[in-house]
Image (cartoon, rainbow, N blue to C red):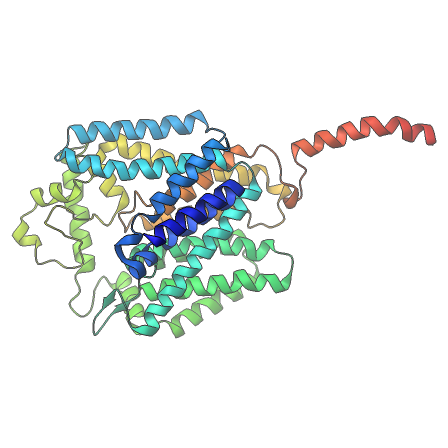
Length: 449
């Protein structure tokens, strides 16, 4: 109770002082929530909800929420509407409604972020908070490794989780911090200050390796490839080769074996993770084909899957999250969403993801001449989102609050109508002031001349 009271007091005080900073603190809490639960127990479960409600109410009272582009509201509204229809005709209405409440929270979170973040400086502040929270998670993974408190531990494999109880979920979050740190590495002028994002990248990479996530490895490799292709210089090539050699040299043997299994398709020590995921994919597609339009209702993937498969045959598989045979995770955000909400709901979800990508790419292209570095803010946020989207191929993270917070940041780019002074341009308001001042003082100047 004391912990909850402290958090409510802190968030209330900060919310009255600064909207951008209370949103940043909320993001840190959303990222590190799993650590609080592990340390303080069930008393910390609802901390993000309390902090969010307090922050949102104060923001609305202060009128710092300025509205959202109608096209975005329509997309999110239609998505939730069709999710409701899928739930009403689905397999278990009660469970669907409870899961939809979780989706409603993350949708409202994204809408809140879009309406509050109005300029590029605020987005930069958010990225700093995001990196800070992720660094805490990576360091906690290191702590777990040093103390032997792995979430997955046997004689062959030890995997740290850090931010979440699941190592794969942790890896998805940590990899989003790498491109954001790259942005600050090239953005900062001071060589001394550049040490901070450089160390951040190293710490995040160590945390990702300690999770042992194969999906995280592939997503991270694609992020580095995109960063390299953006500026394929000799120095960048040297750094890329150095990182690869260092990773191969220092990575634990169990991690190397897991990565090797991606190439060979053969898992050691009796693991059936890849086999189980293949079964989920093939049988999940079968379930989708049986309910293609509206799906089986939110939260009903497990029940529909077990209905289509002999429970006795499946019960011996390992590496799957089964609770009472109905809470089975698809380990694929897209498969799970399409199965539960049909092609209409799934298509709307993909549309929101694509919209965030398009908005960021468009802003990056149109403002390239005003950017100090080739690794611009929209480009690095885009890489962070693409990494999380790709990781969704291996995780059921459709209602992840951090994912939707960053989606909100990506879509908030639509609020930025002018160039940013810090990036080398002149804001529209400043242009007007310069023009007015010129009109006022030019006659005086001509008179003196």
